[in-house]
Image 1 (cartoon, helix red, strand yellow):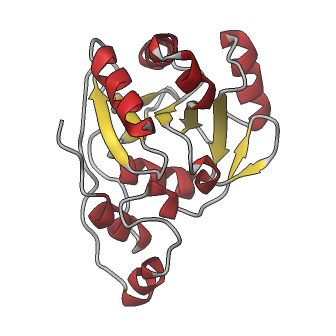
Image 2 (tube, one colour):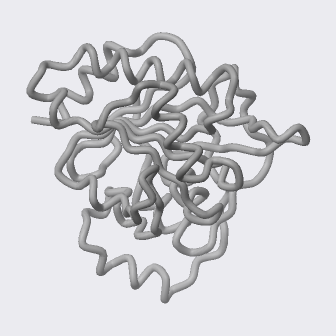
Amino acid sequence: MKTKSIPVLAALVCCGILLAGDAAHPSRASTLLPEKAATKDACCEAMAGAPFSKDSIYQLDGKFTDDSGRTFTLGELHGRPVVLDLFFASCGYACPLTVSDMEAIAAKLPAELRARAVFVLVSFDSARDTPAALAAYRTQRALDSSWILLHGSDDVVRELAALVGVKYKQEADGAFSHSNLLTILNPAGEIVHQRTGLKGGLDEATAALVTAAR
């Protein structure tokens, strides 16, 4: 599939973009992109000095907290192939299916690559998915050390969501409607493939991860 233009998205996010409008229902695929916002020269000039490539989502320097309580930045993933998903732990349908698909991708990898690959879950339920709640989710799903579970502020999660093209919206009952988008990153943090929806595409995602790791 065609990869989104990350430099453009990164510039829009850095310069104050907000996600708006309707989000996809959890059971439906969506690749809705964020709306444009006015740019700010100082922000964009700061991006020019970023240590990562112009296509890398690791230009996002916001801080997360992993499920052990440690401060974490996305740049720490540099050098490793990554499978990334934005989710919420209390999701009853779409997110568990996506996590299972990530496990299936891991099972398809050659042993050497399986040892290097990282599977990252970033919660957009900032209020409820505390590091402790994510640690409980890790135990519930029996996720090993190759999985990184991240909590972040609403602002930093929305920035990341905009970079990868994910939309989400909290409903009145506390659940979220959201895009279903699984993202493959190469070791430089550049998007090389995205699987849209909840079914199929695992062979293509696995192949993209293998190619990205070379």
